[in-house]
Image (tube, rainbow, N blue to C red; front, side):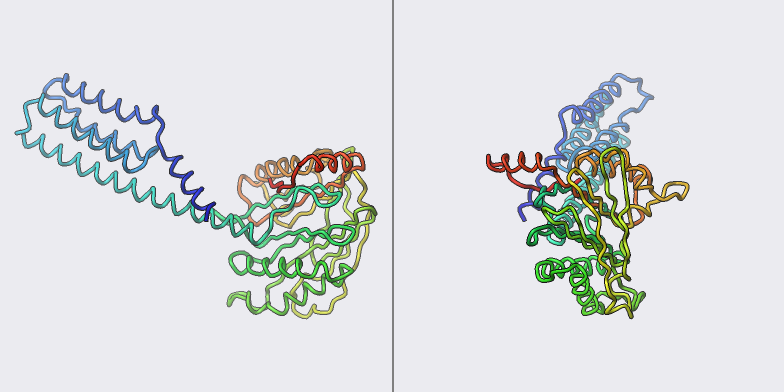
Length: 390
């Protein structure tokens, strides 16, 4: 609620006109009034006063617009006094017309302001829902420095069918990233289901295949709740589970139809660890499938980049897919949060500013022993943890 009030207050403050902008319609009224008074009798410039109230809603709210409209009507009356008085029927019609037009502009400004406030509230609720659904990843978990990026394809949306989570387990960190088929509320609901199942089961199952089976059971148990009449029996989700020990560089992963991660090493080296994926979670008839455990070496100084298919399937104007591995090769030495900023800017430029599907990425950097000692020393002097999100 506090975030909502803060956002609404910020919106109202942003709508307060600056003195420079407010001077523009006032200056127009003054110039038009002086020109109309001094112009020849056959030249009628007073009708141009409507420009001032019509211009004001572009930078001010309804109250300021009403004041400018009242000033324009008053100027029309002044012009009438100097140009033969107010007994002229044409002059009276001009005053009434300007008054009505000013009222219409004020009403339009009030409706527009209301819509802006509602939109700000919707955005705030969406942001709050995203934080509830996907807890912001911490800056650090064990030896890992973490940054994440989420780009929703839906207009004005903060969340979608992509999801990720990370949690501390005994002696290491477990990470989940996945993608629910489809979009909309059903996809968000299924993503919430998988995130809840992961957080509940990550500490109970010793091996990743067992954890993947637990997620599979959760999807099958509640699959009917997220089915739509248009797509019966076609709800499924890809998922990648990774187990990263604190001390041992040997890292384990299991995939349910999810693309493999990228391993970034110094010297612009990008490798793709070998991965043997099982069918996606929730695929009909795939229950009881054995999940393969793959291993690779994740050394100190390396960065592990996890992503969803919305990243690699983003197309440019010529229909070419985004070459993620090729692009990130130039940023292998970047810190996780810097890497996320580079990818975000480059990905949106490639896709023309808009993605066709949700996209999520996580960068996990295994800090060197020197960096870990320095970080722990900083924590001892009161440095806290926070979320690093691009």
